[in-house]
Amino acid sequence: MRRAHASRQQLRAELRQRYWLRAHIAMIALLTLAALWLVSALLMHAGVASLALRYSLACPVAYGVYLLLLRWWAGALARRESPLDGLDAPSIELPHGSPSSAGAHEPSFSSGGGGDFAGGGADAGWDLTAAEGIGEGIGNGLGSLAKGAGSVLDGLDEGAVVIVPLAVLLGLIALLGGLIGTGVLMMFGVEVLLAVAVEVGLASLAGTLAYKGFMEGWLSSALRHTWRGALAVLLLAVALGAVLDRWVPEARSLPHAARLIQG
Image (tube, rainbow, N blue to C red; front, side, top):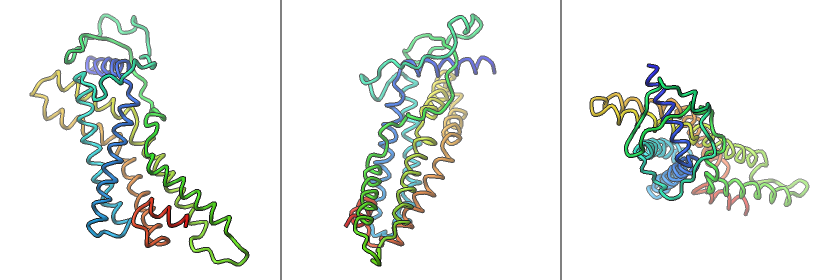
């Protein structure tokens, strides 16, 4: 048990030093967002008009794509085959502890062609800036809705009837902000990629006999880290779709709703 823990800590430390993990998890997030957009667009062209229904179907599919991407990406990192080969830079986040703290009793660890290495523990905290730049499309929609709110305020005359109440606009902005924040903080963190990569790396050393345990290990690790975030994103997305269905029923998509609100 102690040997396995030491091996995990060593692998985590090496991955942090070798790769720019923020860039890797941000790329996974952007590909997941693209999958979500594509599924939603296909559902729209298939005749699914309700945004709430469309988002309720698209989010689980995108989550499945996210898990597959996470598995493939983590496996590539564990084999020292970076999907962003040439773009990685040495991380400034060094593993905690001095070389002497590893001790002679800790096992040396090797995987793929990376050679032996040893290191201290890695910080298990969430990297709050891991997915820097995620969701630019949603962010643009957020900005458009904010501008729409300003336009409504500018055009208010005494006694005028406002088609889309200001409270609804503020609610849409809050839901969009919640979607982005939840995704960054609870799904697209460096710790998730590290956890899955460690499971893949250890299983590759154990050989084919560990295949069943490996399949259970990486998936349970990924789900343990992300299912709450995925559920929160689903609920927020469906709520956002329901609000748009109620107050902007002619909207075919989020950007279209933003344009309609702006007038």
